[in-house]
Image (cartoon, rainbow over all chains, first blue to last red; front, side, top):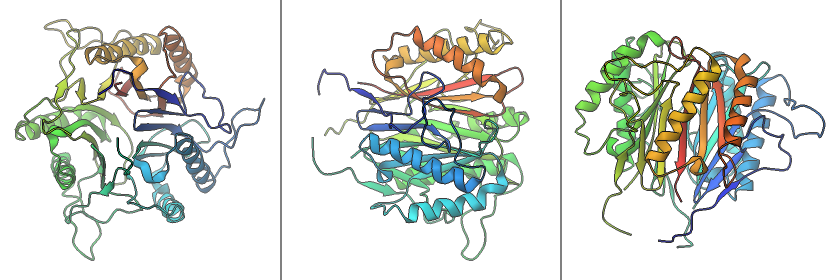
Length: 140
Length: 140
Length: 140
């Protein structure tokens, strides 16, 4: 037991675009790490607006995974620490392709433990965006 | 303080259908337990595709509760440990009936403490599915 | 290590309307505090149904922030403890105005650390409601 409050740290990978409002791309407080909703934006270019990696589900999904992963890393975590991954798609017809991309991506991550839990629902997203992902991690 | 990393455990009740992708039905890491989005699938039958308990909100909701509960149990938890229940419905007209089912179900659970917090939103789900539920629990 | 189970406490500000089902407006268990989905309902008036602060996004958003904040306070927390804020809007066209309200609100909160992470998605809500917000906090 300590009286020092648990520090709250913003996780802001240098390649990330500035958030469109007063929120953090990721936050770590104690052993809890929360990644904000990420989309398929390419690494930011100063003076240019955020740009998706491409129009396809594949391009956006892979970039979104990379964006989530860089925030986990910034907080000293990895996919092995993720306990929950929330997936927002815009079209139920994308489910099979998304799952194939998901499986292929995580097969390459060399997880040392079981994969995270996941919830997938179908929502509206800003025009041009097909996928958004956030994640909750518990550090060891 | 210990240097041993916190173990991450997959929670996979034997009656559950295989997840359609590389994710876990539930995960426990330290004192945090996350249940993945559950729908009203009946206990799995080898060689057959996942089948909802029925077409009605009532049938699917009761089966979904059972599926969430079995994952909590698998992780050594109960509804008393749940701090958040996320409910995804497909039709705002289902809210009153869903709440009646929710109240009746939890009245029977003999909680020793207060019920979990809850958020309910209306989203798209795969054809035939009317409800999806996930849960976050903190173990004592 | 203690054998006493972590207490789970319901957070129920006196001004809040009764939940429409068996859930808590907020729950604290150990150092985790979860705020249930809040909408722009005015403080409850005995014998009257819940009433939104007004029909506009601005009115509902400001009241929703107040409702979330009062639950955080009830649990001994503040916005500084929030690690994740989940925002549910009903119309992608509301994003710029919502972000402006969000920024103005949090500029006034005098946070001592970084702002929480955030995910914003577009869903269906009951008629008349334009915004719903929930939050996860980790206490220090």
